[in-house]
Image 1 (tube, rainbow, N blue to C red):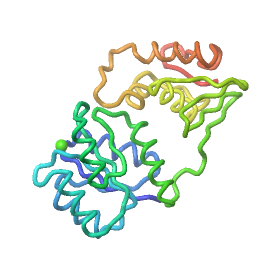
Image 2: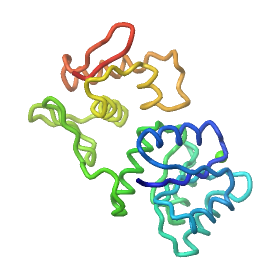
Image 3: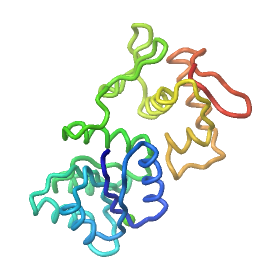
Length: 220
Ligand code: CA
């Protein structure tokens, strides 16, 4: 089992991430502080670090510098504000392995984590494809194959399709899909799920995505 350190001072985000990771089979540890985060990352035997940039004591870049300065190569995924391209570049130059713009969905984060753990040779999921009933999702190329045809999906469509594939045969509510694919910042009254299910039906086959009245959707 992989253990993940979350360095994030915003409680709703750290709780959201920790809850999702726990149900995906990971062990987590949360700290709000950069100094403590750096110490834990260096000495705590973590498999991966999720690192926010804006922290109450030292910022995420300083944390990253301290970790790499000690010669520790633990994979680090940095969380950045959506528009701050400068942050992203600085994060990667400072030795971050990846970054994710806020607000992010849990599925996006999980995909990055799995990728990092895999490339670090520390386990995680070995399969790079999901297959169900003539539909295959290639998790590397982010493409779908339906009955021998290759279909391009947008990032959001792919994440939604992936969520269905990982829960094939189960009814998923709009709320579940919204929080999984669109993240914690989305308006629960939005009809975006219905709109995207329609896109997937058009691209991947109408009969695959069954509407379960009053409950949600199911991948057949
Ligand atoms: Ca913050």
